[in-house]
Amino acid sequence: MKKYAVREITSLALMLSMILIISAVESMFPVLPFHMRFGLSNVVTMYALFFVGFRQAFTLSALKSLFVFLTRGPIAGIMSASGGITSLLATASIAALSSGASYLFLSVAGALVHNMTQLAAASFIVSTNLMPVYLPILIAAAIPAGVLTAALLRAVMPVFKAISPEKTRLLRT
Amino acid sequence: MTRDSRQRKFFAFRDAVFLSCAAAALALFVHSGERPPEGEKYADITVDGQIVKTIPLGREGTYSPAGRPGVQIAARGGMIGFVRSDCPDKICVHTGFLSIPGQSAVCLPNRVVVRVASRKEEELDSIVY
Image 1: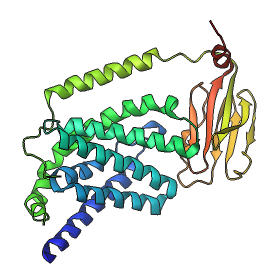
Image 2 (image 1 turned 90 degrees about the horizontal axis):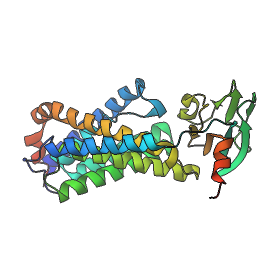
Image 3 (image 1 turned 90 degrees about the vertical axis):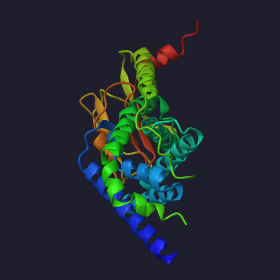
Image 4 (image 1 turned 45 degrees about the vertical axis):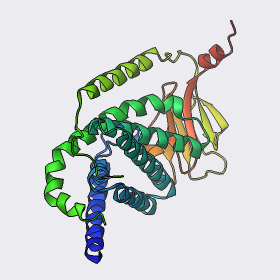
């Protein structure tokens, strides 16, 4: 039992550091308007969700938001948590309901839910309806972002498999 | 949730159908969007959901909303934008200057929104057939 707990903590820590590094590097090179980002670190969260477990993926998402809260302030933390948690719940729900849904579909759906939740949260924060201005661009942006995440997940799967799958199986107690 | 089934595919044929439909719907939606009419352009500045100031875009000058001394909005050269803000991210400042009706810049921590509109848009709203 104890051995697995240590392993679980270590593997979560490794994945969390991947998420934080990918996010940090991504935010250093702003290429998209409106401070939009592709959310490349979601590759790790998606991997955790589908190949480790929901609980671990949720932990990673929550810790990432906590990190954002501590480093970039409460508003950024709320935005991160709202988008991260709803998209994780949506992706996990669709995956649970449909075993035929592809990773690409799940990824795009997660990106859409993420963007719409963030827009709703932002509208709520400023007490102004931001939907008319940002909804089309955020829906449009979610599609390539979701496709990119799914494609990356496919590309890096061999690496993930090499470092953990049989070991992560042991995590389930 | 159980460990994900091995047979889930990365890409399925119906994804291509789904993505094409989504792209087509979006293109149609954006295409059908009303063109902002050419009229006298102005910017509404909103704090906490209340419009506190309306600035015609032809004007030159700076403005700080009441209760938001850390925020400075400037109008110059027919454009308007955040020039200074005490928020951590400065997304509002990085948004830059706006001049097209429908554009907006938002400062979430200060709950300030700048939105460009045009006068004819307002007039159209009041036409009753």
